[in-house]
Amino acid sequence: MKYTRSSALFANAEQVIPGGVNSPVRAFKAVGGTPLFIKEAKGAYLTDEDNNTFIDYINSWGPMILGHAYPPVVNAIIDKAKLGTSFGAPTEIETEIAALAVSMVPNIDKIRFVNSGTEACMSAVRLARGYTGKEKIIKFAGCYHGHSDSFLIQAGSGAMTFGSPNSPGVTAGTAKDTLLAKYNDIAHVKSIIDANLNDIACIILEPVAGNMGCVPPQANFLEQLRVLCDSNNILLVFDEVMTGFRLARGGAQELYNVKADIVCFGKVIGGGLPVGAFAAREEIMNYLAPLGPVYQAGTLSGNPLAMAAGLAMLKALENDTEVFNRLAEKTEYLHRGLTKVLNDHKIVHTINRVGSMISVHFSDTPVVDFETSATGNNENFKTFFHGMLEQGVYIAPSAFETWFITDALTYADLDATINAVHKVATTLKK
Ligand code: PLP
Image (cartoon, rainbow, N blue to C red; front, side, top):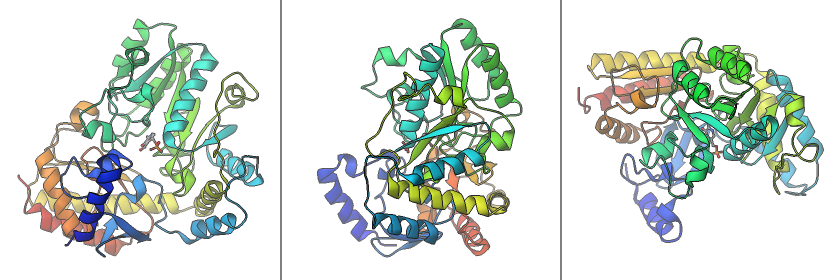
């Protein structure tokens, strides 16, 4: 495959954009090589500027759950754009999408829209602090909640790949209020709470982690967190930016039947436009300005184009009662195929999967937290990534990312992917 035009565009971009990209993981630093510059995408496929076409397993890092350029979403955006693109005043569609989201997700009465997952998580934590009157938060190593200062403490994903989990620019004062726990280790969480009694406003986590690969919560982990929160007057914040409207209509709360106090959304809820949201029961949400004292705002929040895209996406998911089962079945099929091929080639690996999130780790240790996710053979991952690209399959350019399955993928696409792994496996170290 030729990447001539992508290489030239990247060189130009590097002159005027730091590292040539507007979000670090796109730069392919963890795997080397030139990032692909994308020209267009449709359904399950991406086409780059050199006219190479790929089966896409990144899907804009999650939002395109029904495939690229999904017609109802595209049409909704076009129709809205003709009426004006932003007013800075309330619009009816904001209430429409809010009511639909509230009806789909358990345990929330009100929702506020923002412009990114980062903003959603940042605002959720401010609300939790304001509501409880406490300052410290617990986050888990390897969980990523966006790039707000409080969260850049052993964050997963791009921050992890770049080996600078504690980013310069985050002050010691901010860092001291973020207490770091081990994912899936309830005894560790309990010891942190015991050492900080009456100081902890919230525990924030990805209920299924997707930023250290896909790491499911172990049996009872979420339930035990709920109990610990209840007995210590701590709010439980589920960051469902990845899992929301992906694992089930009601996200991980529904899948695991555990109630969170505040839920954060992003990705799917915006149908591919820049949208985040956070939601909770009425008494918590009423703490927000203009009703309550906790300030939170946004010039473009609830933007009509973004709301139109999100509403079209949520309606499509709401109306298709089989979509989440179908996604899980496709992912399971891929899982079975990958396992067989990698076993046939005697490649050491672990595959984690929940619903339509799946990750391949070149390690034989179970991947249950940040430490175990880091044990994978990164050389094998690099070879695998570039080999798959050559075979026309675009997976995330980092071992710490999950793959996102889209409903646009056919079983023929999945077979082609498994076949590609078969070819690439011959180049991997056993
Ligand atoms: N939370 C989770 C779980 C995420 O995966 C991400 C982004 O990948 C974020 C928050 C931040 O969202 P955004 O990149 O839209 O700011």
